[in-house]
Image (cartoon, rainbow, N blue to C red; front, top):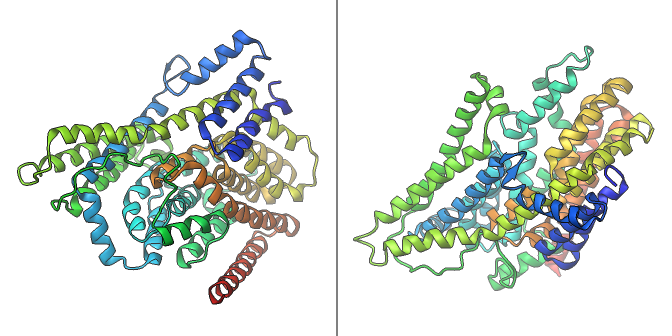
Length: 521
């Protein structure tokens, strides 16, 4: 069953269940049990062992602590604590009042969120959680639904990281390119120059970012997102109160007038600066070079996030303690309650992550990714179709496994080997198609860790985020796929890019026209 068509059954079970029931943990659990049974060939004892291995993989892997996942979980808990402390100190309220006086329109609030998503490009985890913390008070004031906020976060974080060389994604991809190019003496460009050349070939990123700016600039919404935006505008309900909202504080803290903008800004800025400093330091310490590319290739992102989270939490606590004596509501008992409440608010998100990591572990054992890649190798399709096919396959793989990086690691070498031998002129477009497809699959998948963290950062229900983003992601993917077909047939990147831009322009023209008719009616 390992490495065969059966290996795609567990992710299909999880995804169908989550779309049908909207119950994420139940659905992930169903996928986990299915995978454990298949790995064990339905042996009861071995199935139990597989379930145990999957349960502890988030904490213990390959005979040692899984510090990568542990640090991510600690950072998420700390982010919840920071949220509680800045609310307790009145910083969230003060920042919202300050922002509403300067950002007076809904469009301004949306554009600010998008620009923050583009500016914080060093890591997608960092982007998703930091942008949510900064933008949420502003978007809440302008009655922008949490689902819309999660869409802006998710659709800027991975797309900007995958085309930025100074990012954890860029460093990983450049390292993969170095391995691919090292097998052929015919390659004339460096991995870094190839990565930069590939940016305009990532048609999904171009379509996605164009769509993000379109929805930020206009008041037009479609599909499930429209329902969330109408409810937010007409009822003031930014999310469905009946659903689980990760990161949503359940404690009503005392209100007071002692809060300052600094009480929110200073902890977040400290978190950002300390995270960046630690990324530079750990990258230098591990890589032993002052080259920025080497630093980002070797940086320890989870450790950096945790240290940044600790620094931000400590400062948030100090700022609240400094109010004692003048703020009649401030007390150490409330401070302790803030720590507990903040950490508790993030437990649902952490539990979903643990389940998603467990399913990813078992999918890896089943070799779902290698099976899908083997399908391409054995397909013998015309080479001109390969960029579009690689895009679709990478999307399916990332959608099924919940990881774009896993898809990169499996498909980039395969695409490189095929195109170097068959059609070197289409090498970079094919590699870009893999990157584009993996980001699309990541956006569309309810078991993706970036989907989970984007929903957490925005304070949105996970399935509300996935279901509202999915139509936009599919449309962008359709435009990108057509672009890759045009590129393959013409052999020209620029003709493919022009086709993508024309499709985007036509789509936006139709949407604007339809939006005007709706308003006039």
